[in-house]
Length: 585
Image (cartoon, rainbow, N blue to C red; front, side, top):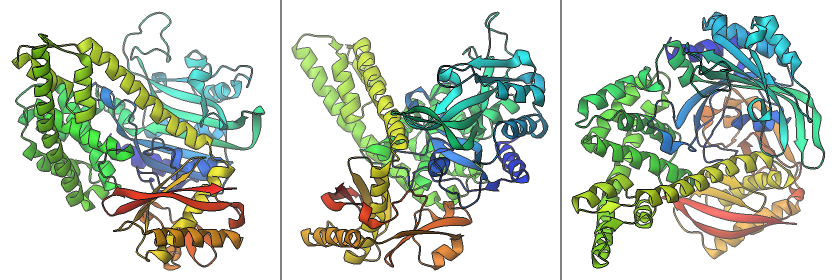
């Protein structure tokens, strides 16, 4: 069964069970500044999981494009991906455990045809905060899973929470038995031996955790699920890795034909990073030295490096992009419409990387000269890491050049520094996700509303062609990116600031309406990625000057915001400016 068939079966199954199909949110989040990319199916739905009314109702389903960068340096093995697709269905205060489990079991066994004997499940074992989830276990028994294949684990395995505070609850995970021999007499889904592969997760949000009151029961119970499409495709096709499925096979085969060096690891890195880069660019991403732009730059440069390692002429990139678009166009038609932009961005970044390699070689030559002067025949790990971190110079190239010069390299010191660098990056990524979702509070809600006022003020002061290009919100400040071809003058900045504060002083109500998407656009409502919104949308209006499609949250009245003050205005990227501002009480 092909990936597109699995996706369509999933969406049609849940549509037949009363769910509304909503479009995938873009990889670059519009209203969740807590992360660089959309990392999970539930992420765009957090406001509705917290109680806001979804315009499509209480039962929804979708496929969600996701990008996770924590394990970017692990790509190349037989399982890690940065880009993947997550299928999900949600109950927003509608059905709960019994119906969710019954639908999951029916889809797996009837729609996908997975034999019951291939399935095992896990449930929450209970602790001082919440009891053992016996109801979920009973639901699985009723569905058809025998008791000996129902396992109970603690919070580390079977509990989900969005950050340190927020809605949370026990989850139940479904596992596929690959048929491998067990690793021992106690082999079970918690093992990493490869016999069991997690395929689906149902989260039952029935609690709220706060630092002050601990765990309390939610009035609205939600169900949040996630099924990884690439993994399911691989298992149903009996393949060993995602790279053996039709999602990657054409590109993998072509790389094998072109390569003069045999490296399955490098072929996987090129195929995976090419797909991920193309998806990010199609959703508006651009390479840069910070945040998501840095991630995109790293993906493209890592891909180019491994093309070099395979001794494939980099001029083949354009053909590889075309091949990938032909492979994926049914699933992602946006790749077709953004073909030229994808090629331009990737090839320009590749060319910049080639110049980086030249600069890195110059710095390497200096390091060699210094070592010779000190009568050393080893390049220390600090130097290797500096070449990598500062100049983007790959450590394996450093090793090759050192060998040519008769030098050795201190790989142990470099690996220590590199692991520290990885851990800092991973912790930063996790903190972004955790902090943003946990901090949907009064302060961040005020800042979110303030972005609407700032957008409207910029249109009046700078020009009607100004459009939002992104935002980032913390409890300390707001950051707002907007299209503009010039640095704002001091007069323009002051006019924008004064206008926002005037609207705050007027205590204007913030109103909300639900309407058809086409009616919202006709009414003058603005948004990013209009094609990504469902047929019924939520429109927030402030006076007669601001009307935007948005998921919230927002204050009820502009008078709640406090005093708006611009702290900095600077360039973000070509044709895009950035304002950093605060709200003072």
